Image (cartoon, rainbow, N blue to C red; front, side):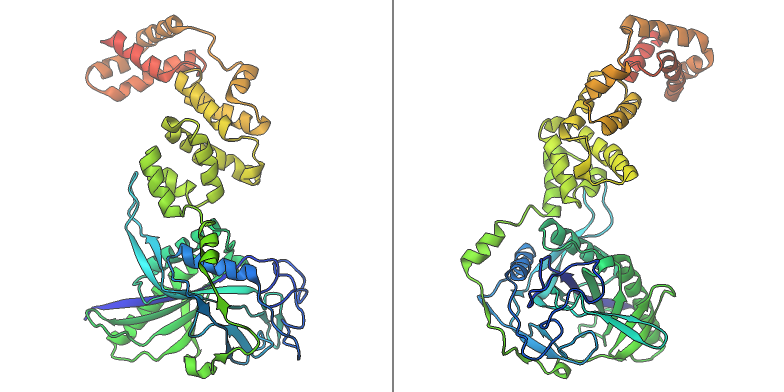
Length: 481
């Protein structure tokens, strides 16, 4: 019997805000333990929550970007449970009236070539709701420490339908969400800082069966790759158990990345175990059209929309768009240069992806700190296209431009890289190369076109690398014809 997996993800994304969702104290990363706490965060008697408007803006914008319906009214509920990282012994969340209903996430699966993206499809969402994050526990051999800096941070939970069937799809789903959240300025989604986390619900069933199998919720997934690996292992484990005639019991399991295995943590709670009830301290949220339209106007062109436009407008290959598009700042940099000369967009893209990113990475600076700006990129493309310098010399020129902030023309002039000979001299060198190298000449005449490279190399050596390779190629072919 063949089996198939059915996967749903619960993705937690911290909304970028200066303060916490229901408290005045600051929100952020890199502070000393428990520095970002106040009476509301610590659940002290008499401390009342006050709604953070920026957090609401963030989740509504996320919902609009993902095609959700934003109801006119949503409300707050208390999810009751005891755990040391939740001082109130409940979490303020949204149970039956979330801010965002439905929606979908476009994902890309492997299989791209040139200007054709890989297979694309849309994963359906159930909802997106807003809640307060909990603190962070650090466990030792005999005790545990809790840090409440993270507690109370604005946290979106993006809940997918059971609409994925492999670790690869889950990987693509998370990648797409992270890109969209960063593009829209909603979150930095740094998983190392806990700004984005995911739990996976995985079940396996016989192929063709409509009913879902018993699901396992997989936790401790600390990276997108970890999500993919954990899901793939759990699919194999459940499939093996079913083939042996054993049953799967609903439970919460954890992923051990070091050992590469899953292990059971506890039996899974259901909604009734949390005893949800409306929060008495917070009023419902009413969202009108003016609010929706204001945030909709702030949503930028999203990554896959931009990528499709680059294919059509600039005829860029996938190898370039797949590097540029995921980084909004890099895409804006490229587009500023490409708009100066749209027909040269591919050459500009090559310099941005291969040379600019290499230099920025080696020096360890942000793109905004680079002395090379979009007009500099275009200046180098133009001198190469004019034949003023060769592509090999252009690499040297780019490094100098990056260091000094000069244009290509200024570097060429300062370093004396412009050819100090004319086409007649190039022809003389070609004649000499042919006379001095009879073997590649014979090979070329016998039909081996690659033999020409040996002759061209000799000419480039005589010209100290300054001769135009296209000119050299044409002259040699004419002479041998």
